[in-house]
Length: 399
Image: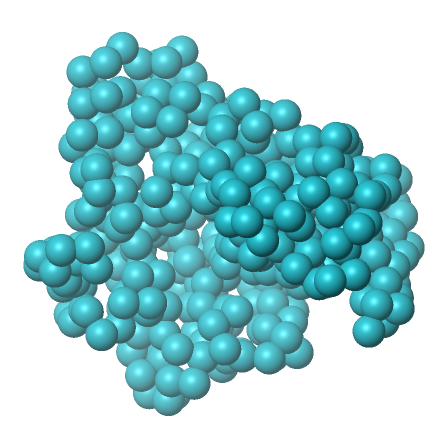
């Protein structure tokens, strides 16, 4: 096995140095906090840049991510298990060494694939049987298998294996699904404790986050929150949102659920969302976020600015010599015009997608820093109002 990094060696003393979460300041339910890990301290609220297969789509390098202020990368257990294989990554020293990234990494458990690959899976109490979306081969993943894969990857934070039911699933199904997810969490906790006690585990300081489910049924969400918080974890996530319900339903579920999750642990809203979604969720007590929007939209020329989202494919930008956003410090805005980047996109040159992805990730990471600064000075409510009004006014003006 390749030599471990110094950060990985820091986790070799069993469960020492586990995620110490410290709240620095609050404003209403909003929290300015930090989480200490063996791969560095995460300042929250934080947006985790999504690199599903150990890379950010859009030809973005580790150096790029460091330059634009990325704190945490997120990778996916199922996808890395399928290709190149978690055993391969383990033999190469773990995901941090494999990616040449020494800051925190969160690995999604593969549970979302239970939802997104519905036509290719079968759920049972022991776990889920998949057919690989790549070659069709049969795969089994349960709580223990998911945790073993994440342990092989050596990520900073492992997510518990769960089922993400559809937002329109009937009540009986959601009740049964949430109960099974709670049972799976207990199995995840036991397996990670076992693995973190082994001498040859890559990261013996690996953290575990449990996941709250319950679709749009607030009473199921609350009961599930009570049940999973009986199982000691280093953080708790709200899953199963942004999968078809309205924004109003999502905000309501967050408001009802967060008070039942431990306030002395980080709260993670999975797969969310737009800048407005993040601003609203921070106000409701969430401090970890991830979403594919900035990278996916960037690859299609849709760019986030403080004056709202713009589409570079619009003809109005053909002769526009301004940067994507005046005053932006990202690599794209520092040197290139809207007209040039639009030309690259139209010509299907990878550089165009790369510059747009870099801009969007920089926008998100900068917004999170602004949120933290506003919380530290007790001005978050004013910041949120100003930010939302600026984005909404800019979009209205361009219509």
